Length: 168
Image 1 (spheres, rainbow, N blue to C red):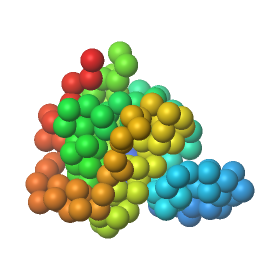
Image 2: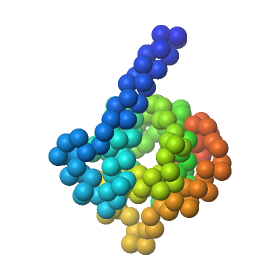
Image 3: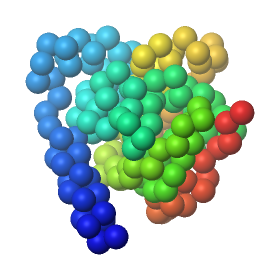
């Protein structure tokens, strides 16, 4: 058990180090950032999220779930807006199931980011990889004020998982 925990900590440390790497370090990254309707969010995604969720939003193995094809559905689910904000602010712990597949990675929270930054990452994530096409015409982007309201909750990653909306 201790060896597993140490191995997991080492993997997490490597992932966090990769997540902190510079955005815009290649032409492909810069093109992705500029193609987004939310370039600020795309640049933050490249720095903070890409290592785990991949540049194409496909996720990584059974540890980090895809955002492509899932984030737009999640944000539209009942309670999904608040959940998505909590997810980015406080992280996620424990197993979740997405489209019949189980994921058990650990996502750190990003409370250190500003309300504007958290909103931008979420808005990029729900509109990227064709997600914009699956949102209703009246979709309203996440606003920094919504993020500020969720900061008052002070959740831990397991509490975030417990609030995950059911997706039919």
